[in-house]
Image (cartoon, rainbow over all chains, first blue to last red; front, side):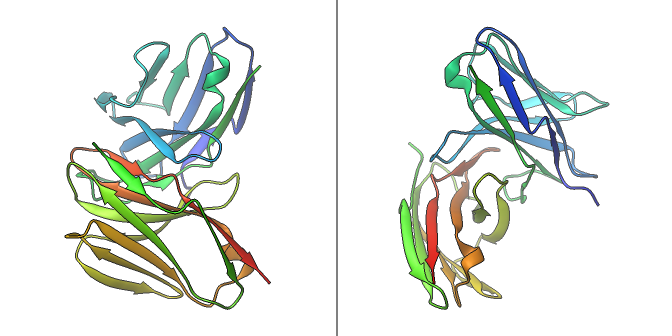
Length: 115
Length: 109
């Protein structure tokens, strides 16, 4: 029973390029959450998606960031025109249901480095 | 506002007991999670408290007092592999789970 999968595990981009981070939830999970973690800091909520729907994107910057969770395929977090401040670990988590009380299972993260 | 506070770092000795505290102020409350995160790895689920009281699971126990906005994680018989960050997280109003900055625990021989 595979857990949450994320790829790539490490991503290096130059300023101005685009970064695409992918997340495949656990089997049977239809709820996906994206978090950002800066060094020595906690996880910051970015966005919550169900299949084909963005439910809560209140933690996501208004510009350059977007997320999707298509009917088929993984969830994608897309960062356009990356800047050095985007360097962080991006974690995806999935849950079977929602309602706030569902345990979220985390993927291994994508570490983005912007040069 | 929403705020979760936990100590930044703690040090304890192998075989000992350590208590990691967490206080929270959130606009809503469904329950409180504790996660363990080793350096460079994903957070892994430890416990979830909804009701007041102590929940024990092997060497780890978690306590919650909703009236005081307070929780703690108790680790017994510490092992070197317990050296990690411990994240307190509150499932509040809506769909968000708010995470604290984490407590880095160093276990020394």
